[in-house]
Figure 1 (tube, one colour):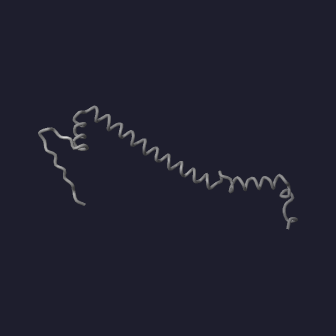
Figure 2 (tube, one colour; figure 1 turned 120 degrees about the vertical axis):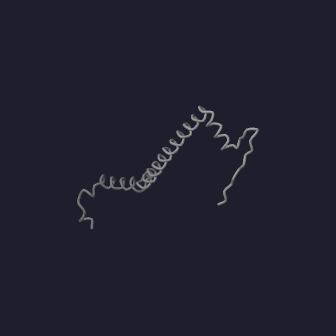
Figure 3 (cartoon, rainbow, N blue to C red; figure 1 turned 45 degrees about the horizontal axis):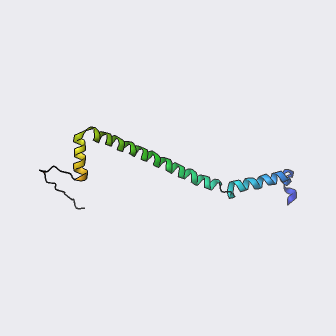
Length: 97
C-alpha cells in the first residue's frame, strides 16, 4: 500500500505540512466554521449599527424640529404627555381591537 504513494508523500516535511493544514482548517479555534459564524455575526451587527444610526439621526432631527418650533413642541406635549391648558378638558379615546 505504501509503495503506491508518490515518493514526496513520505517526506517528513510534507507529512508535517498536511497535519498542520488539517489542524488549522478543521480543529483549531479559528477553523472555517468559526470564521463563517463570526463573519455572519459581524454582518448582522453591521446591519444593526446602520439601523440604529439612522434611528439616532431621525431622533436628532425630530428633537431639533421640536425645540425650534414652539407650536410643534406644544403639539408633541399634548399628544405624548396628555398636557392641557387650564381651560381645556382632555378626553382619551381607546379603540377596541
